[in-house]
Length: 414
Image 1 (cartoon, rainbow, N blue to C red):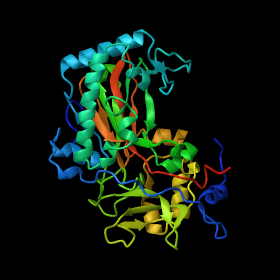
Image 2 (image 1 turned 60 degrees about the horizontal axis):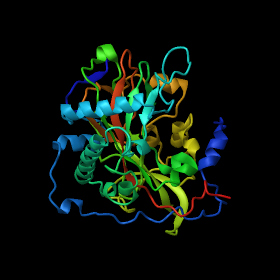
Image 3 (image 1 turned 180 degrees about the vertical axis):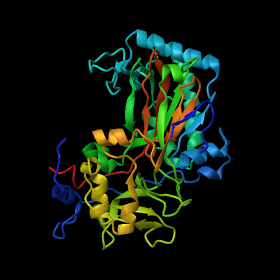
Image 4 (image 1 turned 90 degrees about the horizontal axis):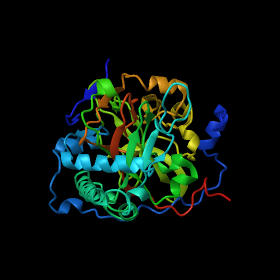
């Protein structure tokens, strides 16, 4: 089936470990001592977001789409004069060597590095430098993104996007922000923008915030994807979820899905609890997977896995089978479990570039002024190769404070 292309319409819709080493990395032995506390529960935030009236920037379908783990595409978000000024600022700063080539984009056929064809970024510190480029237009744009951030926090019920380090750390607009340029031939492979802290090793607990909302605003003119390529390719679940995706107020992030059991049924988002309580009610230093269940006795959570020690190897080859075969409590649930994103290999690179019975492909054409929004955790995406043109955008991530942590049983060991 050919990918669906979105053209200016809102989307409504390391080391190789042995099998035993993988098992030992996760499942605690009965003789292991209780680990130290991972951290306190998440701090209180402004939970009365909806107690005050707040306008909607968009139709309700946009917020619903994001909450379902899908992509929202809003055409003509920026007026033409602002698009032109931002693009001129970006191109001038690039011409004056203010961009950094990050070598994340792959390009060409001979493998030789050519910075003119790679993805280049005007990083946050340069973006905030009032002494370079057109600071006036960047400041105006930052204020626009600040208003967008507040709107999304209210209408997605994400109060954590309005408090703490997530608001103060990233400067004007309160968002991790940059200009991005893709040279002819550049592309990005499929990926997701954020993972659970437990899946990122020691670095996962070293930062005060995490990416919550991904956004892009394209700055191109007269773009034709048939000629110029460069579409944002999104891999959406075909089946709608039964509950909101991405994160819970506790700070727990989604790591997977439970497939629907019937045709027309809905999928269950699967979350990881990194502060799982032991049998005595104390924090055990273990993790566990759960789904939402209002009837469950444990705070509306139905735990579907054994308690386990987390480890970054949860995201290496074969980890989905590991979860299914060693961690899940129920064989039927195990067969339904899918990771949001499979670990990278030549096989998964090929399989995940195709439509499947579980995912559909949507391509977003990078037309100037178009705003793209999606949850940073739930939506795998890629950038298709550009061909004969440069591809320009302003892009970034709105953060929220992540779970506080005092010690970590695996990654802070001496």
